[in-house]
Image (cartoon, one colour):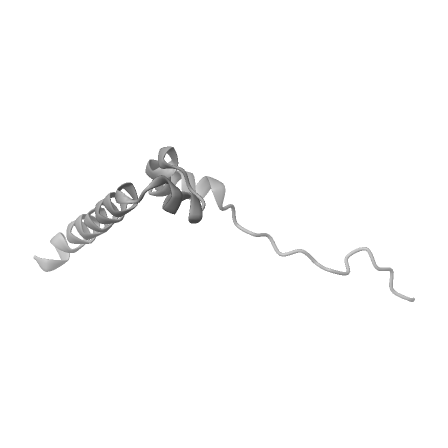
Length: 72
C-alpha cells in the first residue's frame, strides 16, 4: 500500500516546497530580486520545470584536439 502512495506523496512534497519558495521570492522587494538576478515578472518561470529543461540543454563533450594532424 505504501508503494502505491509513495509517488503521490513525493509529488505533493515537491509542490509544497515549490509553493513555499515561490511565496518567499514574492515577498522580497524589487531590489533584493535584482540582486539575485531576477525580476518580479520572472518569478513564475523560475519554478517552471519545462523552462528549466529548455534553458539548460545537455552539454556535449568536445574533443580538444580534433583538428590536430598526427604524424604518420
